[in-house]
Length: 463
Image 1 (tube, rainbow, N blue to C red):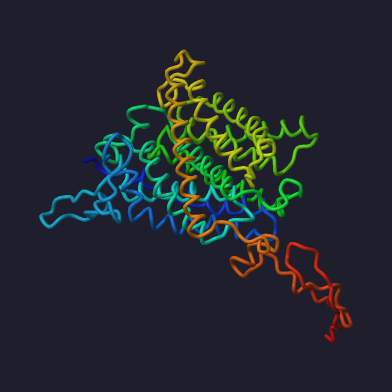
Image 2 (image 1 turned 45 degrees about the vertical axis):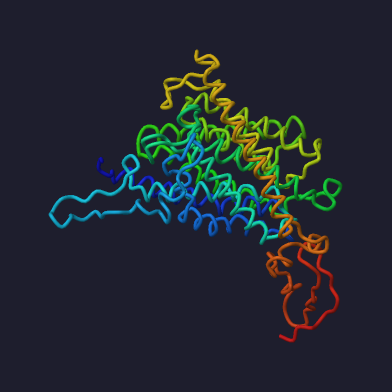
């Protein structure tokens, strides 16, 4: 066993922290896009993934994803690393006889560091799903769905895509090894996977009351912009950290992540300008995420020019795809399907077109003389994950609905899930003041926070 590299370890610890930041960033992004009466519920669904999936990952999730394969490349041994056993044996100190004591490594970093980094992927993937269920999904059933989905869907798919033979285990997953599809940081395992699950969940939940007749605009675009900025910042750890080293691969993926995201934002804004007459801040934030999603699988296989093309194509096509829910009649509240499922498919399939052997992945796409060989591999991997996730997510959602119920009552949905699910409100207007000084009248406010305050009486401030 080789020695741990302190530079690589430091970078991977930093990358893990960056990816963790993406989940609060997603909470801001999703929270700002919902209506004010349910913003805390929306943010809680993202933040609760930190608690739930963090525990499940240590208990058995890592083992299911990165344990030795139990057959056909479909699942890691769930008992091999229960509680991360076997990953932290030994110390950096010398042994009793004076010899150096080794620790389990993944490449050149401690296995516990790799497990921590991959835990953040599991957390953000589950959190992504919740955006399709905004304004109507009860919090308790969400946690049940999230735990079951992570166990039955995400952990096995992570094994398929991220577990390479001889790296974390002797035998890994079928997409990474037998199929040899390129998915550097999770276009399939994260984005196609969560996007397909989001579609299944919103179909089982049904439409929000009043959708699409009533306008349901984002209540706080400032939060949306803040969230997109935090996602962009954290995504450098997401993509460049997937190099599992502080090296040239991390450098190229960092640059590709930057330029593809920039092109994604520009592509979305251009589409809005041509279609709607004005570019919007919501469009800019959405274009950022679309570019990030698309470059995730391809950042190690394309050149910076190819990354710009991938980002621009994703920005344009995702801007068009978010309108499909109105034509097809499914209420994907915050466009998880239009951005993550479609963007993940775009990024994964475009590897088959724009991949160049000059990039670290070392494969050639159709535009670089590679023919259709890599393209069919990408297509099989992408659609296998999509179908598996959609079907299993439907089954899980129907089971949770039958046992616990998924959807809030009409009364609670109208009033807002913040009060009904959490007994809180995001914006407290009860201390509203008008003017100042002695004799100023102070309105007494009633009603929930999503409506205009109703003045029922006035009192005189005596000072």
